[in-house]
Amino acid sequence: MQKYVVISNDIRNKIVKGEYVANQQIPFEKDMCIHYNASKMTVKKALDILVAEGLVIKRRGSGTFVKDLNLEEIERVTMANQFRGTTALNAGKKVRSKILNFSIVKVPEEAAKKLNISLGSFVYDIYRVRYVEDEPTVMEKIYMPIDLIPNIKEKNISGSIYDYIEKDLHLKIQSAHRTVSVRKATDFEADELGLEKGDPVAVAEQIGYLDTGNAFEFSTSVHRYDKFAVEIVLTRN
Image (tube, rainbow, N blue to C red; front, side, top):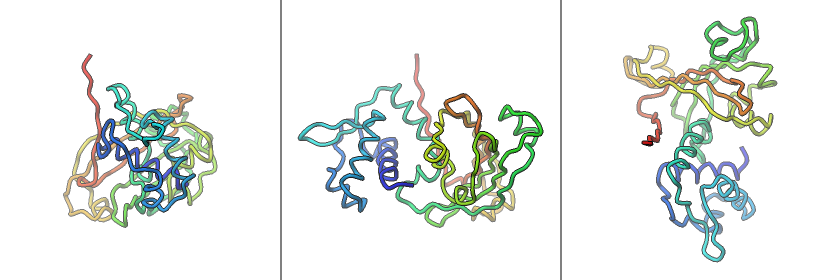
C-alpha cells in the first residue's frame, strides 16, 4: 500500500473515532512529514484525498481543519470506513495474514445464493487469520467469483485484498450488507485467535457489492471479542 494512502487512512480513522473533532486544526504538513517519515508531496497527496472525500478543508495561510459534518455526511463516512478492511483500519500498524486455505472451487450452494451466481460457477475459497502487530484479531472465510475478481495471487491474500481490487483492478467497492452475531468460539478458532476455549467471538457475515451492483464477496469473519467494534449512526426522521 502506497505511503500517501496509509497516511490518509490513519487521519481518516482518527476523524471517525473522534480523535480529531469538527473544526479542529490537524497538524501542519511539515509536522506530519516528520511524524509519518514522509515527503511533503506524499503528505499533500494524502490530504488531497481527504479534501476530495469532504473530510477536511484547507484554509490558505491557516492550515487544514476537520470539516463540520452533518448527520448524513457522518453516516456516509462511518459506513464507508467499515468497508476499508483490516489493513486500512489499522493504518501505520503491521498487518499480515496467516493463510489457512487458498484455492479455486465450485461455489457452495449458500455462497451461490449470496453472490447471486449459478451453481457450477468457480470462486476463490480463501481462509486466513489476520494479525495486527503480531496479534491474531480475526479469521476470515471468503468466497469471490473468479470472473469478477480475476488473477488474485497469494501475495494479495497475505496483504489487502480490497487494495488489490481497487488499486490494481480499478474497481470501486460501493456497499455491503452485514449481519453481526455472537457465539462461543470453536476449539479451532480459539487456538488460532489465542482465546480460551469457550470464549465469545463476534461473527460478521457480509456480502460486498461493487458500484456496478455485482456482489463480489461473501465472507464470514470471526473476531476476537476484545478486538471488535461496530460503528452505527442512528438518525431520526
